[in-house]
Length: 134
Image 1 (cartoon, rainbow, N blue to C red):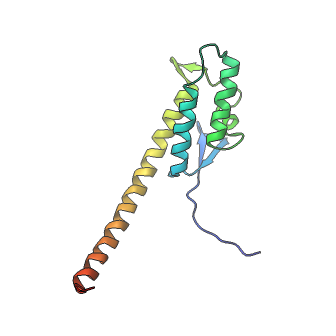
Image 2: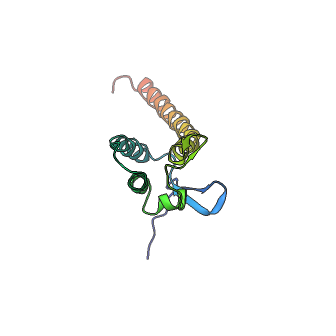
Image 3: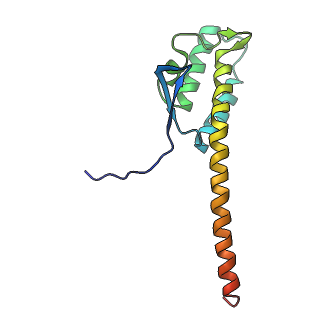
C-alpha cells in the first residue's frame, strides 16, 4: 500500500507525569480551540438541579467530544471531575493547565506563519517593482 506521510502536529502529553496516562492531540489545532469554546459554553447551561454524578457524566462527555472517546478516563481516571483541590475542581484545573500548555505552541506557530507571510510579501513587492507595467 502507498502512504501519504506528513507532519500533523500531534503531541503526546503525560497527565501529571504518569506515563500510563497519555493524552494525544495537536496543541495548535484551531478546531480544538473551537471545540473547547463550544463545549465549555454548553457546560454553563447545566442547571442547578444537576447532581454531582450526572454533572460528572456530562463533563466527561464534554471532554470526550473535545478530544476523543476515552480521553476523560485518561485525564481524570476514576475521580469525579467536580472533586476540588484547594477549592478548585480538577475539571477547571485541567483546562487551565491545558491552555497553559497550548499557548507556547500557538505563539510559536503564529511567529512562523508571520515570517512566511513576510517572506512572500517581500517577494511579491520585488516582482511588482521589477514589473511596474504588469
